[in-house]
Structures are given as C-alpha cells and as structure tokens.
Image (tube, rainbow, N blue to C red):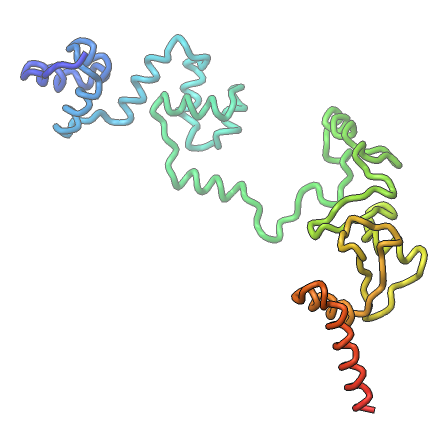
Length: 261
C-alpha cells in the first residue's frame, strides 16, 4: 500500500470522513491510513474525539460484556457517581468502566476529577474510623479470620530471628555480637570486658596485628589515646627508626612535664 493520491481521492476522503474511519478509507483507496489522517489534518477536517469514540464503541458492539442497559446507566450517572462505586453498582471493575466510558466517548471533566480526589483525601486532624477500636469491632468475620492467620502467636519468633552469640560485620569492618534480643555490641570490647572489666577513660582497645577481625584476647591491648595517636603518627616514618622516634617523643614529653613541675 502507499501511492500518490489524486484529486478524486481527496474528494472521497473529505466526503466520507464522517461515515468511515481513516483505516476504512485507506483500505478503499489502497493508501496508508497516515496519508488519510494527514489530508484531514492539513484541511483542518480532523474527526472529533466524540465521533472517534463512537466508532470505537460501535466496533466493540457484540464483543463487549456491557449490556445496553449498563451503557445507559453509565451515560446517566458518570458525572454524578465516582467510577469505582459506579462500577460496583453494575458489577464491573474500575478499569472496565473507564475503558467503556472512553469507548462511549464520555469524558469526566477535570474539575469533577479533582473534586473527587479532594473528597477522598484525609484532612489534617481527621481521626481514622478504626482508631481505638479492636479489629473484631470493625472487621467482618471472614476478614478477621484471614488477618488472624498472619498474626504471630505469643512467644513465637520469626524463622529468621538471630540467636545470642550471632555475629555480623559492620560497615567499618568490626565484628558485632548479639548478647540479647535486639542488642549487639562490638565483639572485641565484649571479650576484653568479660575478662578485664571496663576500659578506662581516655583509653582505647587496640588490635596488635591491626586486624579488626582477629578478636582473640591475645591480640587485644589497652592504649591511652595519646599513645594511640603517637603510634598512628609513627606510620609516616620508616620501620627501622619508628622505635627510636617514639622514644624521642616520650623523652621530650617527660622533659616538658618535668619543666611544668
């Protein structure tokens, strides 16, 4: 399909635009439907949405489950009743009603749609209708049974509940251990405090080998914050002189302390 159109073709398109669809005209003239639509567009003779929807409705006739009585009910009430309750009254879904309205060329004005949205929205200060009421007071018998099936029984825990002693690794690379339900603590601190008591103020717990995943008690040591700062500062010196440099800092610190006294 697809040829040059003649004057006779143009005349046929214009004269039949209200009786035939673009596809039907194109089939009769052996041209593409887009050509028909372009001719009508250029001539300012485009078919109205109402007529287009009527054609769709006529095509759907005999294939739709909507009866003529249902269609009449929709036409009489689509501006008065919101779509969902409208569908409930004739036994159709929200989507089904919306599709049928389009097929019938019925469009709900924007102002009505906006008003319905606002009416359905909760306003500040509104109290939920079920607030302070037990489920059995506002749920039907069957619905209540279905909800109760999903309830946890007293003393029951989900299958993925972790046990005491469960371990996990934090984003910082430290191990945490569960000591009771809902409470995790750093494993290296927990092990140290179990054997040696609380960590003194202004002191930290350090890993001798630098590996935070090695929480053996032999790998843990207490350091003052000052000594930890010195050890971190030593990292910029070559390994052979680190001990000497630390000793120099210690002597310098002692001299300053003695001077103050």
